[in-house]
Length: 255
Ligand code: PRP
Ligand code: URA
Image (cartoon, rainbow, N blue to C red; front, side, top):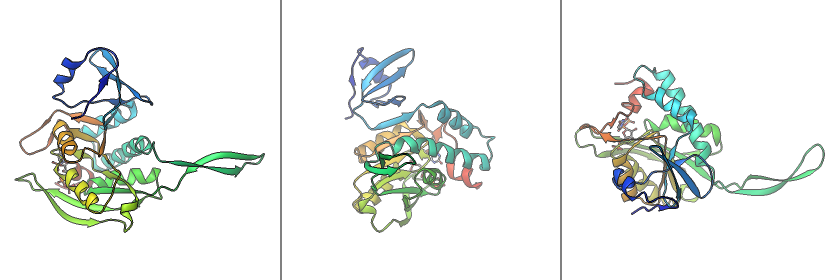
């Protein structure tokens, strides 16, 4: 069970509203997280691994994504832009090493990325849109692909493709998919990665449902979840409501 430690206020009752899922938002760095709950602002210690981005640019772009009148072209651009913005924070803990660089005036002791290997793995199809954005930030990352689709009747994930870099077990992996609905696809994709001995996996999505977060946490509590929004419900077809519809169809103009 995930736990937060309140630093101020007793918020036990408030958290009950969230049905046992604690949320916090990244809006400043450091150990303590500022949470806006209604009109209250609560300070919590970060002990969990669900990150919700409340940056205004991300929130604005997610609203445009949700709009049913947004075209596929705009949708693709927005998914890519949000992935860049989220990727900036998701890569915050990449290790650095100190180097010496000659400036025109002197030698500077400065830092560069230490060469820790990274891979981005989109869940096909819709994850492709996010991988593009992420690669703009980290162009040297390797790319793996995991093909999973949901059976429309059972909502169970069906795997149909998996191609990963041969040294994937030596890499930190950012798994990307715009939607975390029942959580079956993400959980199945993490299973694939763990079978290949990947140790450090982060899952980056745009919209998560509470149920999806619960499922992914239950199956893989070690995997951090980064998302731009958490929606309340799934409908009888397993779609996130209000969500943004079928992410793959909207990205690629299919039906
Ligand atoms: C969507 C989405 C996720 C999955 C989420 O893919 O991109 O992969 O559904 O649902 P879940 O959390 O309930 O598993 P979809 O199955 O529609 O395949 P597609 O990307 O090929 O359209
Ligand atoms: N897959 C999608 O593309 N959208 C949803 O809302 C749920 C699953």
